[in-house]
Picture 1 (cartoon, rainbow, N blue to C red):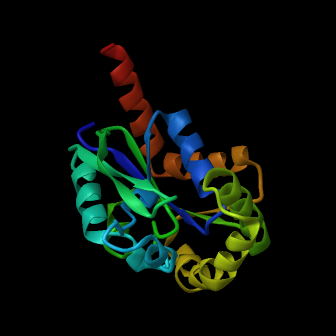
Picture 2 (cartoon, rainbow, N blue to C red; picture 1 turned 180 degrees about the horizontal axis):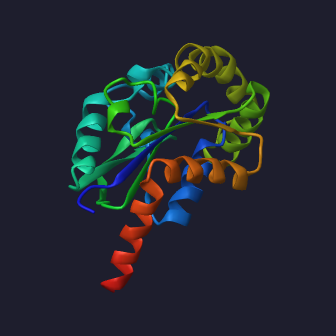
Length: 218
């Protein structure tokens, strides 16, 4: 394969989209690309100013860089993926991850299906639909555990920007999905839904052929 099969996976924060993307990447031997890497570098602002930014608005991501990288990957070329520090709201200076994937690329993020110039690059689009109360519970646990934030800060942030932006920008993007997965159902069932859609489009056979070809050259 000269270019990868590309899946776009969207859903609200805490919907389970990243878990689905990671498991698909593991089962199908692909690369998981999270759009969080493309948050704008805010190192030119004070820490207090950074904390006041709306990170749940589509403008928070550096779309030109994201689009450029995804087009390069879609063409079978490599990119240097920026690394983002959520505790300081800045990119890690001089640190990137080399990404090269000609088999399967899973693009995961709340705005994965929002940007109209990204959607044509996907071979299959997936939206993970999850009730708001479930999303909030998962977001709370993650931000306290992984990002060092207090429950009070998480609750205020969720009410002020996360939920309103999700209603305005994220949930409407479900209309562009080929597959709607239930974020409260079993992970195995969601994976089977995606595999079935890939099978119907002839993409699963293509991926299996690519894996067999790779193993044959080892």
